[in-house]
Length: 202
Image (cartoon, rainbow, N blue to C red):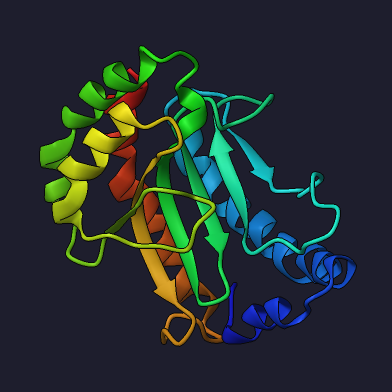
């Protein structure tokens, strides 16, 4: 699984160089985690698919993060609630993601925000090391007690998101040679977030 040395890919400041390292070093680890996660996801009867980020729109600047997303849709994942495992230069993350692409019309924001308010108690009951983010393309984190404010913003602002999960700093003892330790931690996170997903997907 992931190790501290994996973050060295971000030292390469060229697009071709970093993308080569992403494909050779990181993507195989995403695929390995997908193999472990898929039986858990498939248990709900949905046709889950792992979407590894390809960064095809990148022409000059190297990607600041990379990820694999899980959704029950082979055509894509951004248009519905999904799970995302990703890597920034200082942490690994696993989120339940509700992104801005779900808001196809102006009226969708308030409707989706109301649905998110319906799981507020479940979010509050998550373990203390869970965090929030409001943009999957920005390196940020917020405390769980900011959930109501972040959901309110999601309902009003087009370019806003709600991400719920865990961040693992690159100096975490989980990022070591013990493959099972990190994988088990990530799978535990997936299992803890699945009840929230089911409420949002209904």
